[in-house]
Length: 117
Image (tube, rainbow, N blue to C red; front, side, top):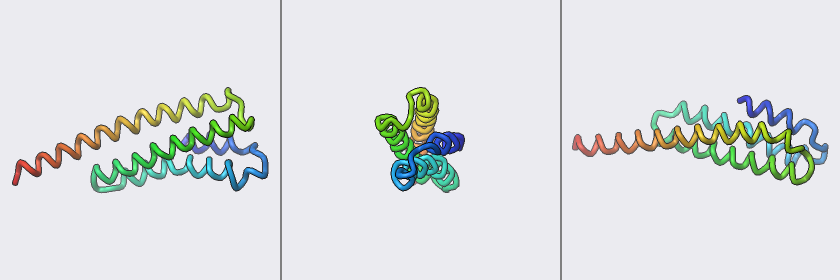
């Protein structure tokens, strides 16, 4: 959720004509990341949780792309975006690790069910 705060701060100085474009899309992508993590954690199965982690990873990739677009349009300076992108990449590594663990758990449960039959 700290990333959301950082993104709101980063996008606060975007031009007014970007309120319904880059600013809005960037903020929505930022909010999507922790929202999907939270929703996935509330699910009853590893498979469902994994699906929401995949969505969070996708949103984080979208967010990085939107930040880089803003940089290319000279809305941001490199020193502004480096800490945010580093934080997003760290989060992505954690999400990929969780995804691998959930996938392994799901496969193990499936194997255990087959053995019981």
